[in-house]
Length: 427
Image (cartoon, rainbow, N blue to C red; front, side, top):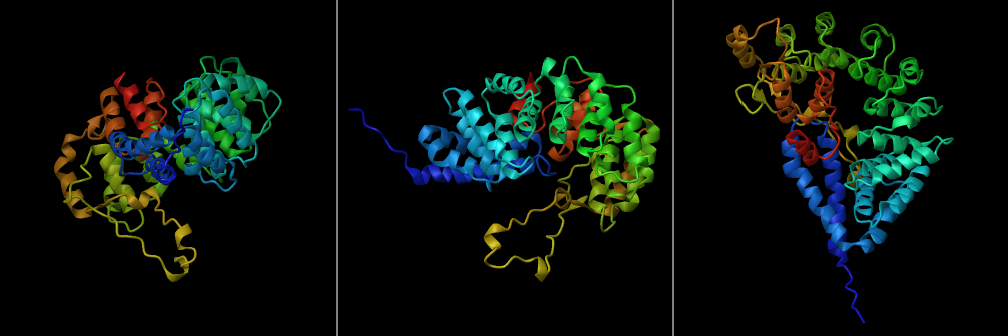
């Protein structure tokens, strides 16, 4: 009789705990200023893969004992659900049954909660190519249904950069706002764009739907998309996505839009957007803000992104002090283990040594033509953009990818595995 060898569960459980932790670190790193695509691949991502592999070695027993109970837990956070879903998918003999079970879990979620986000992450990141066909079949089966399952399927296909073909137009006519927003984003990958269904969504009452439709319209070169973006950036009385709208205009070629963004300094959203316009006028306007107590770090980031300063140069930068918490913000001892003292990405930016940076700029400004758009100290072109996508912080890479698409380059999935993105770049 063959002998069954039981996994050594303390080790397997440790792999699961470490994978959960590193999945959270990996996800946060995609929006932080202290990682590049290469550093993420070589550090956090490599360690995450090692722990996921450890779980895969344990086989189906680990999936049954650890993964499915975690996925069935309504309080599962994003990193737990994504790690569990990835192991279940990548270790399955056939992904069909696993995808079905994951989608059953989605049916029991509130769309946008942590568990649903983690499940979609797993569907988007899994190495199993067969998942695409299973998800497309789901679109055919969900002809009359809305809700988290359909929104999750569409979002996973969008993140995998899949062309949905004929299935897209009906999705753009659904009633569920989460489905509409996901479908409008998916439309950027369609070979044949259903313009008549997409364009009205730019005026949808739900701003998440409008954002997705406008951005797709900009990337696909639809007539009228830029005036709509301009309205939301400058003229709308209420706009929940003004920072994003300003960023679109910073990425665009219109010098008038760039000047209006610069005139909005010291607004933090304007400083962020101006970092993509490449204008020396933005660098000049930021000089007086380098020692501003609230936006000095953003002003320094703008200058560095355009003229290419070395952020490791201790003569030009210093670390931000640790944020101080008052007694009311401190967790009780009982709560302490459940509280994560997360910092905003802006709090991780280095602070400019204002006087030194101004002196450096006075010496170097003659080398920068004000009529040229600059990126990382080089004139903006395909070569400097490719270099920036490799070397600039991940927090800027999502917008830089949109800039590349506006300039005719393929659209990259910036929330995919770093090693996969690097392989696509090499190819």
